[in-house]
Image (cartoon, rainbow, N blue to C red; front, side, top):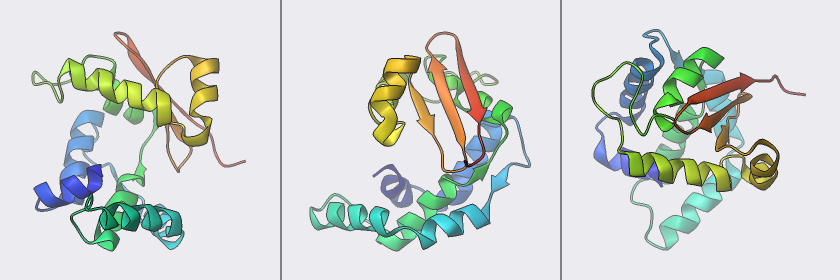
Length: 162
């Protein structure tokens, strides 16, 4: 849904997301891993099915394939743990990025995103992660995981495929 909304509201959603993440991470050379994005797209049957289901109920405005391409690029940002932690620190800081005078989102929105991460950020493992770790978290296809300690910090770890 978010990618569909961004597709509607932004002229170049992939480029705009890259600009925002580069700024948050403090890394102007950050880029998409096109191999990962392509691999995700090549295995996108479930995501496509969900998107087409949403579209059938009128909850999806744009071309599904176009939105999936954008989504898989968002999932394929090549980042270090430090870059991940810097990027998502605004969620621990009531919506305020580390190196900005302007909030990215308001405090209420940060709380809402953190709550969503507790319930679904780790997909099928969200409940166990919440029980064992006790922090909002989000996993990525490349092995990166972030966890938020509200009011304190964002922790980022990475583990290669096992």
